[in-house]
Length: 338
Ligand SMILES: O=CC(=O)O
Image (cartoon, rainbow, N blue to C red; front, side, top):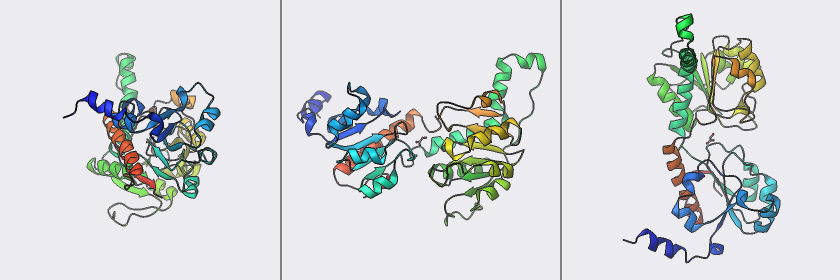
């Protein structure tokens, strides 16, 4: 069996300039794991834009004809202009489930394949969504503050939380994460309803609402798990909050911009909905300051889907997609397969 040293020596026989160039505009969160990945560093020339001494536009122009793939996350957009400049790009691999930072239409038009995180994040995303819901209903982090700040001793018992069992929970977006949320909520004894682009023929057990307002009117809580697209931007608006009502709770692990955040803040401040569990925001990492004052709001810094375990799985998927693409095999988690 060859040892690590032999393995590296053999791979180093490739001159870096012979290897396919993969552009990274900003470090994706998974890079700490990926950077260690021998396969990736031995088989590709990773062009890390932030490490270059050149200004970004000069750096890109220098490599414009030779970059064959882009490895990205939500941190830097992949625009039509960028793809116009990088004439040899044939693949965009995003280390995220969401693809709203990529101009998918431009990729389609230019014959560029796109892959995402597939279902790698579904379990962790669903766990976090249900965790946020339970936290809001049972006031877990709020009561933690109550104890830590010594208020329990002075003021006595903390107000009661609300029961999860029996709640009607409307899931907006029944993809990989949404389905896992539904499974978990069933186990907790909730009634699951959903909205998505289309009714899922294979899922008779959950009532489908084509109208998100109607879903909200029939739900005690809404969990947003859908993708951010032109159709879903600000889809959760004043009307939806009114339909959800004073006792209603909202959880968002999708993207901040799916919610009209200004309206949500107003509804929370004025008690027009009961609470919120939020992992994502309209302008991260800035979070509307009004939310900091509200004990019925649980905040999390866009970490719902990230665990060391999901990072390891993501790392294998990213490498697998690059390997598949450059050896003409089917992509593992295609969003666009050209
Ligand atoms: O938000 C995280 C993702 O889209 O993967």
